Amino acid sequence: MSEPLPLIYPRREVAAGAVHVPGWLSLSQQRMLVEACRDWATGPVPIRATRVPGGHLMSVRTVCLGWHWQPYRYTRTADDAGGGQVAPLPDWLADLGRAGLAEAYRDSAAATRYHPDTALINYYDEAARMGMHQDKDERADEPVVSLSIGDAAVFRLGNTVNRAKPYADVQLTSGDLFVFGGPSRFAFHGVPKVHPGTAPADCGLATGRLNITMRVTGMT
Image (cartoon, rainbow, N blue to C red; front, side, top):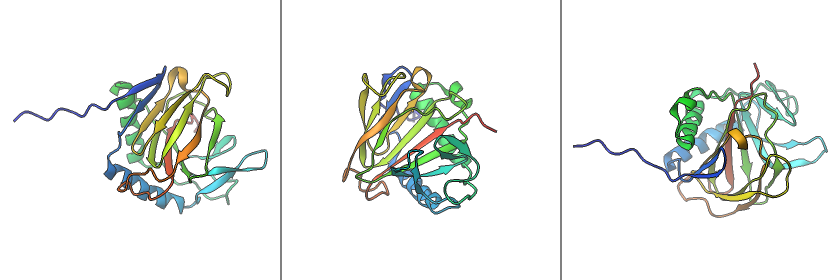
């Protein structure tokens, strides 16, 4: 009997270096990630709404692994959320990030060189939004690997100059992989809308959306 052919996922390059791979995570992987996120959310640094320098709280709630992100820097301790030591980024999650990079870019050699050292996990309820911003607090320009679980959302990928057009809106659904690097690494991006009630019944998340983004900080 011949060996089964490897799965080939549909992929779309939204912009140079920005690739969307729908349905990349299986339902079992999604459930595993949801359970892990529940543990991390009650860990040494519990999930919280981040307060930005202007004073208001972000509508998403965030928990971090490896390094703690607060606007606009990374620290090993959560100085803005009780001072606890941030939980480590597990090897299996970094491996999943490398696999995602290999799938999106069809480049296994580049994936072996990718060593994410932090993950930001954002939870969106039906009212949560993420304004247009750049991921530029890192000291490295390695790609960002993003995984979506739960309710569908509109992901807006813009240009690298400002928050205005041109931008492209991408519908991200549960299990989707999105990678942005290269010319798109510092593109403005955001989430203007979440579609409540669209999560698959068996993904492990009854309501809301989880987004896990892995990054390389370039810090030691």
